[in-house]
Length: 103
Image 1 (spheres, rainbow, N blue to C red):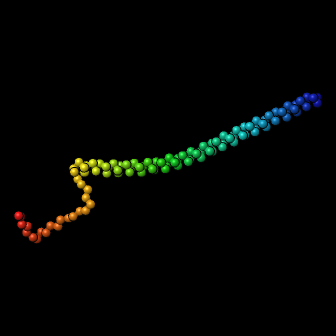
Image 2: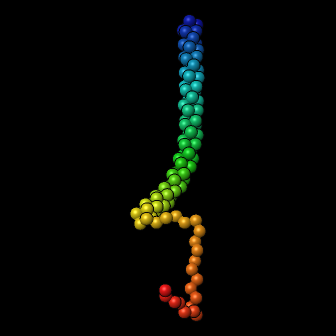
Image 3: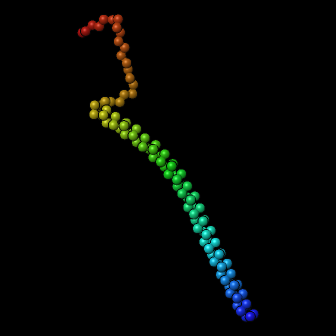
């Protein structure tokens, strides 16, 4: 009977050792997976912030493009009508009390 009990004890010890090793392996695998999940989630958050910043920049650039394209159209129209740029404007003052003579 002692032989059977010693075989049982050795089988139980071997089984508990295998279970311990499996627990350590699966525990390590779980920690690795969890770490990967957390780092991926952190990177996703950073990417979302970058996307928001780029969306704001894109909107600003779109507005700038519209403004510059309208100015470009005005310059083209001015060239078509032979307008010239002026640096100074002089106004003519008309006197309503005097009489004008035609020569």
